[in-house]
Length: 370
Image 1 (cartoon, rainbow, N blue to C red):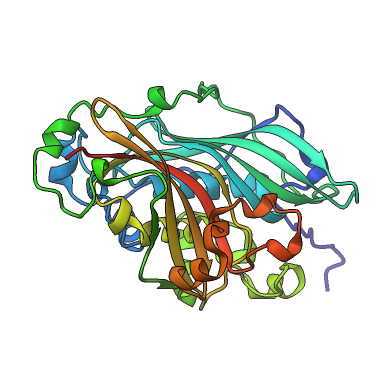
Image 2: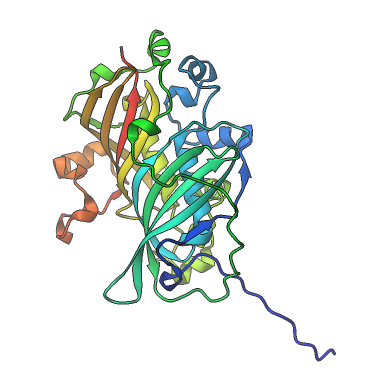
């Protein structure tokens, strides 16, 4: 028998609180060419009615080169790519902030992402803290397809066994993404698209501030379904697919459905009511997952109109949208009333929190005129 000792390597990824430095930038290693099949599978998994993402002729009529990538796909890719460097050791994802989709992407694009640390706030207990990052997804031409900020709850300490990061490539991305007008793609052909017959009910002029839509049908999340889609977008957090890890390290002691998918299903559940004549998603803000979701849960959605702005080429409709698990939107609204749309994470009294709420987010859509 040889006396030589084997070299054992146990690589760990993500970061703990002590590994984050404000101002640091991480170039995430995933680089993925988005095939037609991948795009079709992801977009068909959400039953989303937004027509510019389902119909190439309508998309071209609206001024796009072809059917663009769905914003939910871009957000999920960017968020998932960042897990490798940012949140693979995280306890929970806390918030979506200032999500924008500056330019359309298309099947065939090759995408990468990078994240910059904006803030690190340790908890008074010292065993965890909140990390605030900005993530930007670009294609091979350097066009920004998605940009957002997010906050994650991270365990204290430092990761042992993380391989050294490779040097950053010379690549310029504008991190200052604040102007909604500047970030919306050109909708100058919206009038052409609007000239045809609407595919679904409710164009821009049908929305009024204060309207509440209790979307009728729910979505039961399949066990293999959520794991497949999590892998499809390259989310490497074991909380979503490693049952052995979850028995020791999950706050539920079981696998948790990746929040980006829960967000996508919630938005899609209301799309026939509020987005069936939308041309583009102008962005998300003030988003959070107040409670976790597991396979077998059924999600329902409700939307409240909070702003309507008539613009030259479209109507900008802003909605506060919530996702509820295992009870219908009607049932939840009958119980909680307008409090259903209140900021869940901002509630100080635990007795007022809605334990069934799994998503809350503000969304602005560019909706066709009549």
